[in-house]
Image (cartoon, rainbow, N blue to C red; front, side, top):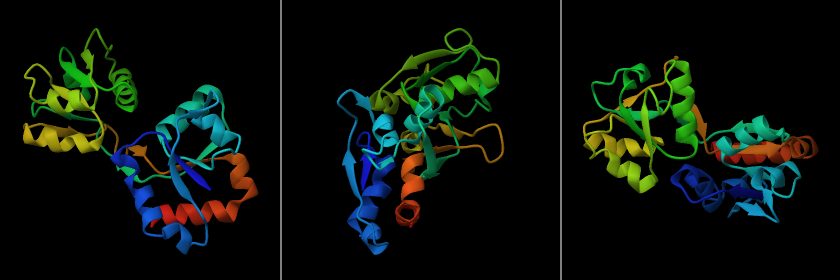
Length: 206
């Protein structure tokens, strides 16, 4: 059974550990992590939907595929729950305080998060809040820029933010968070091999 990793990042490290430590074989299943982005013009979500790949690990990509393209995928578990969307300067108490400020985000999940929270607080990106895009290196260096009030990025960026005096800015609702990593599978695979799917989930949870 193939577990597709869309790109190399620490978010998917638990899956590689599960394979390396023999957690899958201990459950009596054969599962291998492979880096796959697309094949033959098909997206990774399409490959999972059709059963050509067993599992998709980017829950953000899976969510976009379900909502935007109607692919028959189900979320099974996550390896990470991020409870804050950004790291901000101490004077920023809520997302609303970003009005008139400058922030940096990436082009994927962090940008989606930023725009969702702006709509929640009635802020217009690019008008009420100045936003600049930055890759991983750019966002790590953004904490040194005195004009930037917040950086939207994965929780790993808290390291650089804390060193620069920034703090995590938590989601507005209790219990709200963003799930990352983990597994999503095609509905057809779950129906055809429920026991195998459960064993692989058990290994990842372990």
